[in-house]
Image (cartoon, rainbow, N blue to C red; front, side, top):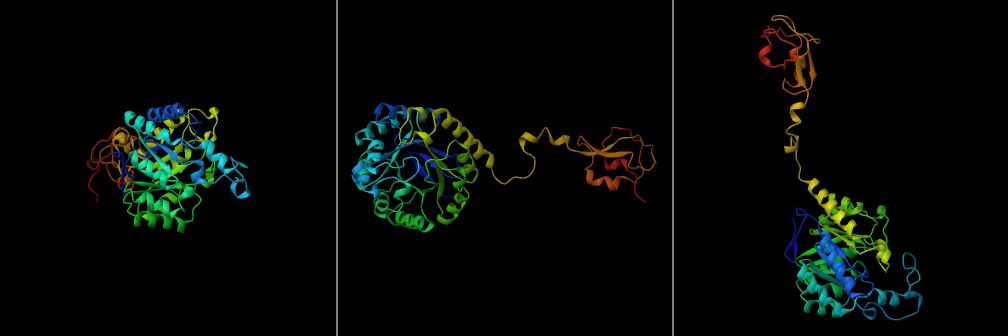
Length: 351
């Protein structure tokens, strides 16, 4: 079983799911709000807060052409440059957020979108890196991140299987030893039916790595289902309140929802357990109430026991019901009274 460790926390299918609260643009232009979101993520039980490290001019160019406008979806018609300028987090906010994370005991790392972002994050001692879905095709960026030797998380939204394979090969070829792939659908929000969670065990088998979920559906049901299918990590966008607005607020969880999601996915993880047959500890008191054979009408010694004398009823102190054909038709070895559990000593030797 593959394992990845980020800031001392082991991530694997046999560990409770690792939870990343995605800050994205929910800072709404305020460092203090970003810090408050970090505190709320810690309080809710998240293992990490993830940032996004880019500037509008490192992720696109300032251009009015049709290629540089969003078509459809939540941000239909927006210019890419304007959208990213609004959403970008100033680089000088990274250091205080990393410092606050260390103080609170919650990991902070980021998605870099170009080499300069990686260099900045390395200076801050980032414990891991996330490659965003739409950067999975950027092989030079993946290789540059892999050369840091840090654990890598790569989202697979909007990618073909061959493209995922190329990205994995690039990461491993450039030195990545600890890799997590996230099943992701880059729809904002994602219809649950487009989550295709059965891909999670397939990715695990295909690439022999830890696999998780980057989820953009509304609510928390999909992460619970993903956990039952082997997801070792769940990433969800996180905000203080959707009513506060912002680029990503519409599909982000609020603190109470994140708390509930973490509780629910941990319950789902615990419920998976292992292959098991036989009574459990919680069944110790109920097992004796299973059905068994009892005398339900008095029988005199030497009389033939008929179907009217013995039945399969609760509780389970007598012979198993499967032995009913072996009891009916035998003679009683002694007087048998109603309410007595049947055992072999009650039966006279067969002729």
